Structures are given as C-alpha cells and as structure tokens.
Image (cartoon, rainbow, N blue to C red):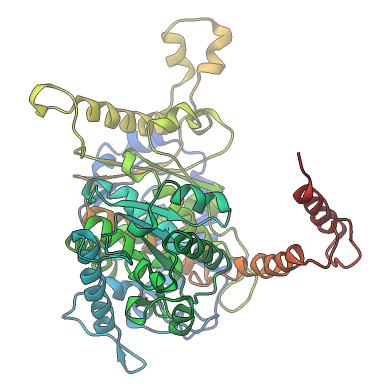
Length: 562
C-alpha cells in the first residue's frame, strides 16, 4: 500500500498489528535469559554498524518472528514511500502544507534539490558560506564591536529548537571549542536567565545571536529586548545594536526594525522545523564555538546517517530498527517511557535535546487525516549521564514496577584520558565503560533467588536482593565523540522518531500542541501589564475561577513590600 495516495489506516487496525498482538501473547512472558540461551550468537547477530556507530539491540525482548513482523509493519505503513517523499521535498507536513527538508541542510554542494523552482541546496550552502565567514571574523577577533573591541562573549537567545540544539551541540563538542570565547545561552523568559548570563560581562565585548524564524516568538523577543536595553545602558548609542546583535530569522522587516543590519540576518526557510534546525543558521553559535571545519564534520556525520537510512533495507537499517523497537516497547510491552543514558559527560544535554525531538514530534492524538490515533504514541524521554544516574534513579530501572527501556551510549576512547602512566591505559574510562556494560547486563539478566541464596545472607532479604531482569536496552558505541559522531547520533534519532511517526500514521513535523498555552499567555500577560486593574479587582477577568484567583493573588504578591 502506498501511504501517500491511499486512505489512511489507523495503525492498530492493520492486520500485521493484530499479528503482533497475537505474537506478544505467545512470547510476552519469555525472559531474555531464555532468548540468549536459545541463541548463543544472539549478542553478535542482533547488531548493526552505520556512520561510525555500532548498535547492539540483542538485549531487547524480541525474537526473529518479532523482528519479521515489525519489518512487515514498516512496509505496510509505507515507511519507504514516506521516506522518499521527505527526501524529495514533498509536502509531508500536511497540516502546515510544508516540505520537511532538514536533510537538505547536510547535503553536499554537488547535489541539487529543486522545490518550488528553487534549488534549496544551493541556498543552504550560500548561507553556510556566510556563517563561516562571520564565524571566522568572531573567532579571529577581526569583527569589532561599537567601541572597536573584539567579541569575547557570545550569547544565543532562542527557545525550543533555537536553544536546545545549539546548547546540546556546544556542550557535546566543547572539547573542540575555542576556549577564549565565552558562549552562553538564554531561553527561559525568566529574567534571571538573562541577568545571570550577562552578569559581569562588558557589553563592548558581547555579541547576541537572536534566533526566531518569525522574529515574534514571545519569550525570545522579550529576552532580546531586555538584552538590547542592557547593551545600550552600557554603550549609550543606538548604532551599537548593529554591531552587537545578529539574527537568525526569516523576517527581514522585523529584524531591521530591531536595529539589526540586513547583512547580519541569517535566513531560515519554512521547510526547516525548529527541532530539526541545529545544522541550519540556528547553529551559528555552534559554528562560532567549534569553527567552520568542525561544523562541516558535524554535517558530514548527519549526511552519513541520512545515506544509510535512505539506502539500507529495513532489516539492516539502524534508525528504522530503533524506531520499530520503540514501537514494540511502547505499544506491545506497555513501556510508556524511554531512558537515554550517555556514558559521556559531554552528552549531558543530549537527553533534553531528544525530549523535544521525540515528544514534540510524536506527542499527537490524531493521525495525519484527523482520526483518533487508536494507540499510545510518543514515549516520555528522559535521562542523565552515567554514572550519576546509577546513584539516582537506577534503583527504579532495576527493581521498580515500571518497565523502562534504556538506550546506553558509550565510546571506546575518552577525550580526556586519565589513568596509568604515560596515558597508555585510560583506567578511569575503563571504569566508566565497565559500569555501562554492567548496567545493561544486570537489567537484562538480573539475579535469581537461587543466585541470591548462594551468596549467603538472611532468607528474609532474598526478595529484597532479587533482580528480575528482563528489562530491555540497546547499546550504541562509537570510537570517540567527534563532530562527525555527534552528527550521526542526531540523525539516527531523527530518523528513528520519523519511523515511529510513520507507523502511528501521525504528522511528526507540526506542533499545534504548543499553541494554546502561548495564546493564553499573551492574553494573560496583557492583563498583568494593565494599569487599569487594581490588585484586588477580579471583575474584569474572564478566566476560570482558579486562574482568576491566581492572577489576583499574583498581583497582590507583586505589590507587597518587605
């Protein structure tokens, strides 16, 4: 069935979905110990390599028939057709009538992709060239501020995808960054965020990058106006804005009205969604930090995974299989959450980045044509770097009542080796990775009552020391965390999320769920700013009784004096 041209079928009504339900009824109680005992080669057979990444998915609760049925489900849902439509520039974001072409952001300049009569890849590389030129000016110190001093502080102002991607990439690739540049990020409209980011800084050495496609995002523009005021309080000249602010936006008029010079606006396109934008001009702060060449390596890693996703058959396709396993864990094993556990401190912000990528993309309740989706969609994604998480929430992972599939991420080499003399052996990294492997093993196989008893101790404690195991996990390994590796990781999860959305029949590229709260916030902000309403006046408020009372209480608290 061609899912682009045929009437949409709700996922749970597909015959292969029903076959998976029947299959689960047969193997749902099977333990990973049994699956590994029945197949001595399972730990090497259920693995894949792509774009510098190695995936071991053998510790998932699947057998050969499970995988065959999941692959059949992907074919039935039209994964290949949807994939081709995305890469070719068709309007697959149907509710907003937009193409979805973040993959064009990492295509080489030798390629061509014409959408609405325009070669989008040529546009991308023109912007990348402008970004590279500006980045080198900042990094070299040749770009001078209003008073003639070089920039030493760069503050990115954005929210959502205009913040999460750049923050994650900067933290992940800090090892490769120019350390005499001070990079900071402001997203929260809480004034404390900007106050702390600018504390102790000299405006004469500070550059602000304002990231907003529309240049009217409430939180971003509120912070940008506050940053503008802070800057002018020190520099005392409106002309300074043009030297200390640049914009990433599609709204040239609004950025010009703000005071940003036209040549300092880096464009975005409708076909770049916020959570898929870190490799676009939204990544300007990243490029400034790590340099144009490392940024190109980031794009190359994404591209390598794109090519694998496009060309590998589903049964050997890393993003597709990860997406299908996520569907199996969510819809058939009943796992409502997924933990992402990087054993690499530089990836501390990676789970937060994946939260938006996954939950904003697939947290939907209707299909592309507006029908009730009929099954659970996006898992709740969360996580923390190892080994910190082990001493925080791993108790629940091992012995809790909830099933939480885990993605472990590790590397063969540390970027900061420590250990034996001469650095020939990195014993500290060995310890880190020993913990990763041990946790995945313990989750899978646990410890039986007989094994507990064999260790000795009181019989009354056996139940407390028992580990049931059978907790699924996947492990991703790479040689080292490089810009290329990070790019491959990001694209891997992008395409996994896409795969899940195709199976559920939803539009993974809109985000109507964030709109209502934003609209209500603007209305409420106007009410809070009104000088006509007294702190005790509740008569002109038209919210529910709870919200009215909260607004009134806030007004009172706002006016209280110590």
